[in-house]
Length: 291
Image 1 (cartoon, helix red, strand yellow):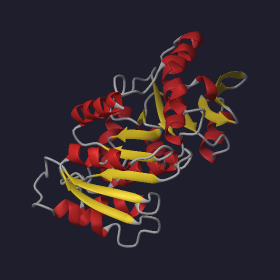
Image 2 (cartoon, one colour):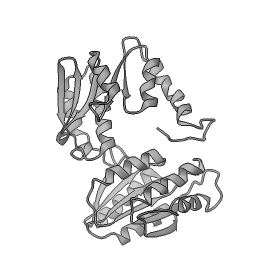
Image 3 (cartoon, rainbow, N blue to C red):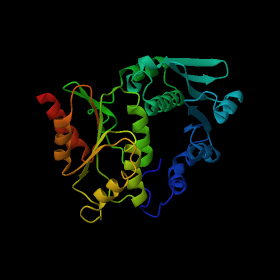
Image 4 (cartoon, rainbow, N blue to C red):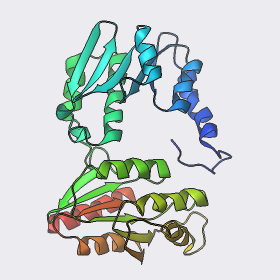
């Protein structure tokens, strides 16, 4: 949730939660809020909800979720190879193998997204067959969910395009790609200039421990930063990198993407953190089509 900090007098995650809590505060008395039990700040929003609450978490034994379940309230959780909706004696299971979004359960944040979506469909009173079909048919490609973990194959290498621009998102992406086999790992990243210095640096601090090669690029919109300032912060974040052995700076997003593709070999993995989402995805698609 820690995105856009430092903007419009929102300086902390707690400040941001006050803004996002407005949605929960406006749930009708006969309505339902779906909240992540594993995020303490989000979970506390339940106190502001006039309606019911469904808690979800990948850990079925999370104390808050377990207590909620014991009270006969709705919960959703991961149980082995399936996500489960449960209330009292009612239980509905969807195997993660039937949810392409999760890549057979290996992408943790997509499992959480699937849990939240299942709980929301349940709250809306949708037929379970409809929910099952929705989970099975949704594919997060560049057409349906641009910039949200879009996966491409390029000459035997795996490309992942994502619009993650904050430390929490970067950490989730690293955990996801850790579950994907690769001979060598490369990342292409810029930084949004209107983020706090520490947030920009922390992104590459995380990436430096997870990727062999890092390509830094300066995008079109520096959002108030001077020329090269964002690149400098990103490079500083790599000062104590445990894994990164090669760092390169490129001026221009498409040039950085092309540079990464030119260095990829079969079996490699490349995470591309796009800035101009539609244009960058179009550029990647063209290169993939060219082979």
